[in-house]
Length: 441
Image (cartoon, rainbow, N blue to C red; front, top):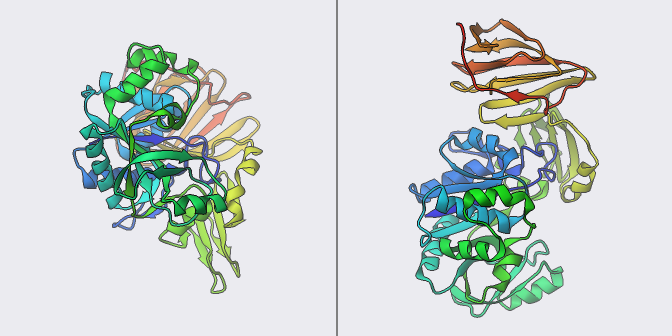
């Protein structure tokens, strides 16, 4: 089975845990069998591999999310990186070209596209296999998954099938309606459109060439910024005549807000938090190393991170986005392919960061034009390379790099450091990368 997972999101609806780099699918909130916590993307990837261990999984995503994906899923997962955001049709077209020209997948094979963040059980992924098999029969050019509604939602588009059979041709599509109109749709057998569809790879390649002038994946990648943003639904689905839908009646939740997310959380408290006996329907998600105490509250979510603190009625938390849009803030936490960092303190001419480097990983060999840096090793062992000179480091060691100095650090074991940046113009753009050459140990 070939699966493309669409991973997007601006990271604003789950503030303060999410940000531009760390969208909701990367927040570890779901407990595993080993009492650890995993993210949505880890959960979905694990479920796919449980149902089909040989599945080819490719994640279509933006450059900002690549490091977090590698951090959480490893280096082997396929990634089709979008140079910029252009909505779902360009993303799917680029992914189709990537599968053909980079991964070498036969254009006659079927592909299933779905979001990276549904909260579902394994039967959902069994349905993806059925969806793929149905697309392979060639009865229709597109086969959609239609989710049996549990209530008249105003948040989803609707698919109205021509019959009540398990597999049916599609009669029409309806935009997000009012609750009353949604009731009418459901009475006619309408299904939620969960954004899941299957096709033969050649079909989407042909559609892409009809709408975009390009030769292959590399050419499309170079032209990507010039493309017009348009959804796959508008560009392809709603214009296709030979289209089927398969009914799915299992659990399916879109965990897009704090209100819906807390419904799926296995624990009322994650991190340091205390609820007194008079609390009801309260969730605490705390990434800080300080305790949060809640008393006598009802239907409230409390979320604390280095980026800020949210205290909200659960229903009102759905309306967070315009308020977060008004907050201009430094990214305070991010996962990278090599580990993670957390900003501890920001001043006019300095920034202090706690860095965790995973064993066997290293930073890029780089320099900064406008700032000095100091590393204080807190724990672990590794080596630094400063202007080509290598030095072993361990707990208690201090390394100083002046502006313009080329440097990196390589972790033998998990390495934790405090990095102090000093300068009048500290910026994430102030970074020049180099090829690493060790001159002297």
